Image (cartoon, rainbow, N blue to C red; front, side, top):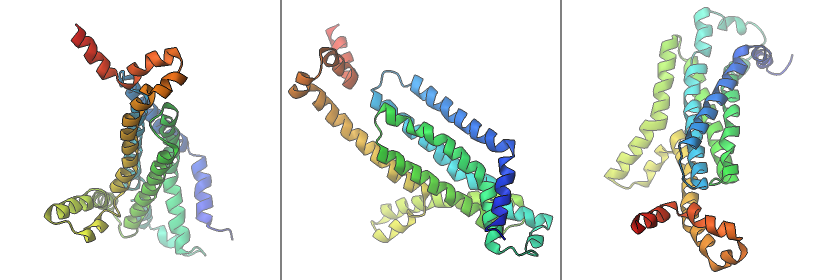
Length: 267
């Protein structure tokens, strides 16, 4: 007997479905269209500001996809077997409980994993543009993978106690809203009432707090870059080593607003 036989069977079946490849293609196409629109409409902002903006936009899109994956994919996987009466037939064989649970989890979460895997290369493009470091990219990637697994596990947990599909989907949605939004809201209320450190545990299960804590490093890096880059470009040592065209272009790239203000005042 093979290890996790339902997992092997479901993976073979999913590899023959056209929806497995269509979902991955559509998600990558939508993320690429959003990336292109933001890149075109960013105007004459500095290059590292564009990279940061694109990184945050694609990251928020991937976070929303990871949060809602469990509601649409795993919330009705076990309850459907209960309604059809086929769940008891699976236990007549030599299968264990973890075989059924892992098999259903992997079979239903394969589309979500492929979709997130298609978004990650677009999330890495700001590394070439600037404004984002490799450590920040890997932190956000780890947050997205963790959020996706949490959402899928929460959906299959609710499905194990439900029989109706609408009830399972709505319960999964309410629990995800509670973890992602209500618990951080209670934390802010607790901070407003009194600064109690034990209330910090309300933030730990929230995927939104985890993502905001990881994206905060990107914002801090961008703020430091805004302060350091003009000093580096306009320093005497940099002017000695930079060629002439770079010296003429550096003020327009680093401080475009200051240059426009001088033109208006000259008129």
